[in-house]
Image (cartoon, rainbow, N blue to C red; front, top):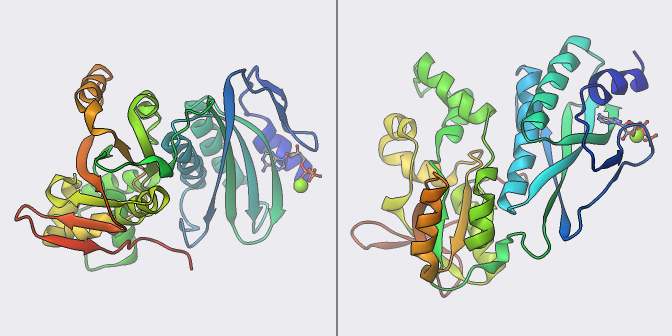
Length: 319
Ligand code: ADP
Ligand code: MG
């Protein structure tokens, strides 16, 4: 199968049709229509074999995750993902692998009504780059830079489970039961981007980020972009029960530094707290207030004794 029949078989076939796609795969560029009053948001994430996933993983899971991490970036902006392109570098033309990969890809894209509108296919070390295109009402995307002093810091869900999965994949000294391994691997392989928070974010958030590199590193980005500091209440941070079970005292530090959870961290004005809680209740969502934005630089944390410490923004960095 040559490059063009490969693209046709695995990617053009199975791509979701959307009314706003004038033309997708098959031309030198794709063309889409942006609804009036909306802005285009664009984000790219690459997954590299041996860095973000292991080559022996089911190709379905690799594709599925590649989509979800990109959808998560849209969720963090309170944007709606619409169109995706895929740059795929493959070591070989392996039909069984490509079939699984395209199944995972189309399944994940269909979950959010996203159309695959183009890409590039090359031969080389296994690498998957997806560019996601989404929309948000003009001036309503949420950025990292809008947090103000006294804003409340929220986390959309528990952290620590995906990082625990990574560490038991890498180390043999954590003895995780097969049942718990399955739960943790699901957290790592099947993250659920928090698009369900889009309304809440658009109504209340002053800044937002997704937790891909770890809470301390990602919240640090908000402090830097907003030019102020964050004070975390360590006891308020929701840690996944398996991280506590397997890591004990180390669970908190581990979860602050562990990435891959794809929950959202965001800030809201203190005066909208009651309204925000009511809106969360109406939407059937739970978020956790974990601290406050304060004057200064960097990140600090207080525990239940009131003791304060500086948190270094430790998280994953490729270089
Ligand atoms: P070009 O010659 O312009 O580089 P290609 O031959 O690479 O175009 O691709 C042909 C068409 O197939 C283009 O529309 C491109 O967007 C699309 N395409 C290529 N690879 C992929 C892929 N992995 N997934 C989706 N679309 C793809
Ligand atoms: Mg090309």
